[in-house]
Amino acid sequence: MTRTARAAVYDAPGTPFVIREYPLRDVRPGEALVRISMSTICRSDIHSWEGRRPNPCPGILGHEIIGVIEELGAEITHDMRGDPLAMGDRITWTEYFHHGGSFYGDVHDMPQKAPGIRKYGHDLAETDPHFLGGFADYCYVVPGTGILKLPDTLSDEEATPLNCGVATMVSVTEASDIRMGDAVVVQGLGLLGLYGCALAKTRGARTVIGLDSVPDRLAAAKRFGADHTFDVAAMDEDALVEAVRALCPPDGADVAIEVCGVEQVIPSGLRMLRVGGRYTLGGLVSPGADVTIDANVLVKKWITLKGIHNYHPRHLIQALDFVVANRDRFPFGEIVDSTFKLDEVNDAFQRAAERSVLRAAVVP
Ligand SMILES: [Zn+2]
Image (tube, rainbow, N blue to C red):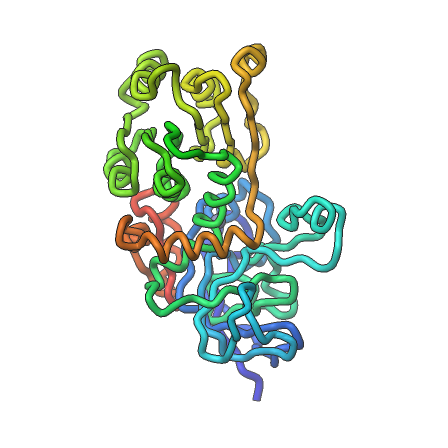
């Protein structure tokens, strides 16, 4: 008899999710079948669902996933770190998979930008193996994925955002080259910004300044390592720049990080930096983020400007180690602040879209 399992499928952008059953097949070599413990709704899932980002339909969304290995194919014996893997292990894995060598993957060590890369939560529900997204009972972890075993000490709430939000911010803060004693400005205090504050502090920043307009986020940032926060809606740009610079003597911040997805903040971010400052853009993931800047400022102030998208598999290992090592210092478990069943996924997306929850989790 064919085994089946449930998935929350959307047929077209903006339409509700419906629960459908698809067949489960035996794993092939290099694959694992994982019973999903928890998936969280990332902002990019909402962009896909609302049609602002192309995604194949009918599709199963969800790439921040953890689960327990139910079947393990031949050839998978160890995780990325070399720990042995067995049925019953709880795992996280890279949000993407790719096949074989490439100029970017091998020559430039940027596997996250290799051509032909595919992401979990970005695939058709109708084709084999059906289950490649988080909002379902099961997910196949396929060849080309970096798997990491999760320690029992970590709760599901702490572990689920590791493979998107945390690993991405490890990548962004590494690119920002945060040094001991730096002053760091974080523009945007959603999930990425909160992890960004905590990572900046852990990397040795003397001062972390968080900027947002949502009161709950400003309050949360203080618990995640921000020394100061400013409500950007309550100040004009000149006053904000002046207030931030005053906290970063003698001449402004060493590092600014954009994770708010609003390109209009770039000119003010540049003004907050000192000569030789470093600016990393991580939130502008949709096309059309046009903005006017005076490029002369980049030259005269010796600014290093970088864009960062996705992460290297090593960043997932670092993300896990960072959360395990600092879980008593920062309340990572608070980030996932609401839980829904699989058949409540429409409510979950509604709540996440209107930002009345920070991170909604779906537990099948
Ligand atoms: Zn994500």
